[in-house]
Structure formats: C-alpha cells, structure tokens
Image (tube, rainbow, N blue to C red; front, side, top):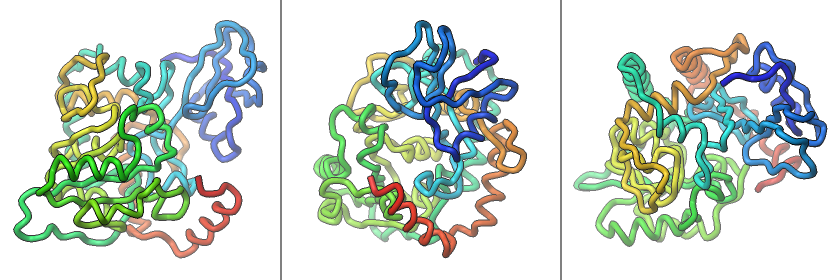
Length: 342
C-alpha cells in the first residue's frame, strides 16, 4: 500500500500518536480533531470503526487502524502497546458487512510457494512456543480422564466491535454457550471468560454469570496456547481464539463471521456469500500474519518482519514470567476511575 506525503489522523489519544507516526515512515502525520480539516483528496486515518462525523472534503481516502493478531504480553485494555497493527483501506478484518483488505487479499492472491513455506515455518514456531494474542496465564489445566470430546468456548467482550459488525445472529456469550451445549449435549464444555472482563476492565456479558449452568468447567488464569493444545474443538462467535485453534490443527465452529471463516477451514453456522474460495491453512496464515499486518518493534520503533516480532514477543514473555505484576492492579483501579468499565 502506498501513501501520500501527508497523512491526517483523526482524534487519536496521546499514547497512540507516536505509534501512528511510526506506522507511516517517511510521511508527515498531522493530527486533527475534525474530519473537515483534511483537504480535498487527502488521506484520513481513524481508529477502528470510529464513525466520521460532520462534513468531509471530496475524495478523501479513509484508512482504518487496529491491533493485529500477535499483539502483546498483556491486555489492550491495560493500554499495553501492541507489536502488530493493521492499516485497512477497505474496512477492517472484523467487519463482515463489507470486504476488508484482508478479505480481498485472501480472495484474490495467488500465494507463491516461497511465501507458503514461510507461512508454514511461522505457524510451526507460533504453535511450538505457545504464542497467542495476549500471552497471559500461568495456571495449569489438566484434561479430565475418560472424557472423549472437549470443546472450548471462549468468551468475548460483548460491546466489542467484532460482535457488532461480525455477529449478525447470536451475539452474547451465554447464547453461544447455550447453543453449543444444545448441539453437543455429551461433550465436556469449557468456558473461558475474556481476560479484559476477568481483569475488571470491561463489563461482563448479559447473563454471563449463568455460564456454569451451561458448561462443565470455567477456567480463568490458563494460558490460551496451553488450553488450545488440550481441547478437541473450539466454538466461537468471532473470537481470535478460533484462528489460534486453526493454527494448532483443531476443529473450529463459527457462530459469527470472523475473518478466518468461509474459506473451507471452519464449520460455519452462518454463510458469507462473498467468501467462496477454498484456502489451505498456510494460505490463510500467509495473508493474515505476513501480508496484511504491520509489526512495530518495541526496542527500535521500526517496522520489522513477523519473524522478528515473534523474537520480541518471546523475549517479552520471558521477562514477564507469565504473571501480572503487582502494580498492575493499582493501574487498573486508576483506569476504571478515569475510563470506566464498558
């Protein structure tokens, strides 16, 4: 993707501004408070699915910025800066109402053998090292004996845009759990609430307290990578855990329309008529982890390769030791007061 000399960024918080500058090296980034400040034919960057209010000059090109899929050691709700980002000129990967740059790439790209070999190596390393989006959790989980089929149901933040734009049917965690239980009465169901909710930084879902009624076990402080290795299937709305399960060769059932559904790799409860192509797992990995995102080094603030990003994530996780530092809860109390729980 090529960019003009000037990039206009709308209403970004102060902690994200340095990141926006570094994601567009060699360009002048101008931060504005109103879309009307962008000149005719200019390029405007906004965060996520933030709506554009007020007047906009003609022919303004819109780019949307979001976290990527190999994110960090720690939560975004804790204001921990991601190592991966996406810049999308069509939509965003979690907006199933329209094609995104990722969907366009996956629909049309002819993946070269060298790229697929690179994707296979990247996938193998992610799986062998247990990397996931947030890389949290230190507790151990043991699969119960004499259980033939274990299904993981990961919870999501119900106010999240990925559900607003990617779950046109079932949209709550408790509805998902009920549907999975009704379809799989004899399976052993595990429910894992979203870590933002467990940290008290985002509100729990409607009726989520009833989860133990519909599952066999609820887990909290277990690393997602370890948990995925131990289960047989993962059933999701739009959770990235479904993609992480695919990387590990697990069966995935989607009740929403996440970016990784519709390509012949998942069991889909809802059709996506735009996605008719059948992809291999490494084609999906090549698109989602190599071609689509940007990776920004924590040490040099330069753009780096996904392989370099894995190196940094592994070093970061080793330093963190798998547990939340003692001072983090105090910081979360401040966040709850300043930002509130949404």
